[in-house]
Length: 234
Image (cartoon, rainbow, N blue to C red; front, side, top):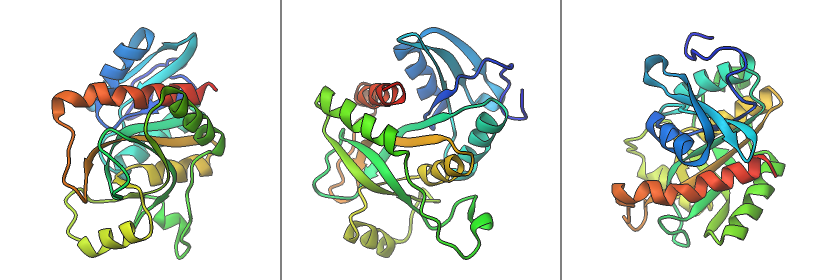
């Protein structure tokens, strides 16, 4: 048990899927896992542990933004022994070749700032995904026939962005999509010798204005969860 996670020793699996929304964690656990048990509800941040094809899995909310994710991932790794951490979440597309409902596998994560910036000081550290997870996720997506894009994403530290000039440069330099957590997840995984990947469903498009209706999001997010689980145990 830690300050932010009320699980007992042994209740968190080595493989953890991290949606931002705690209720998405609940939906994913109840939909894809067997023998599901609620292991955390401190401050309303829900975590569940069960099994997928006999493999122990925890699905735990991370909250919105890198500071929130940093709290949970630090505790999951240092206090509960998590080894494989996969963010499952939504993102906004930043390239015309990408459509709503497509999946993005984040090879790298560009950002202006993360909670780790104080450690790196003047260095621009380049966090990246674990290659084994990335390759396995790409294979799983291909097998499912899911429209998938592999490349760099942008982890923003603000939701209500007022920097159109910055977005223009992200688009110009081939960034596939924008979200708010992956860069710090990759930093922490590198620091603690863990595996990490972000598997993201495109819920809206910054260039076209297309957006996934709320009543269709869960069905569309199912592919992302299955790809993440297949990659974790490939």
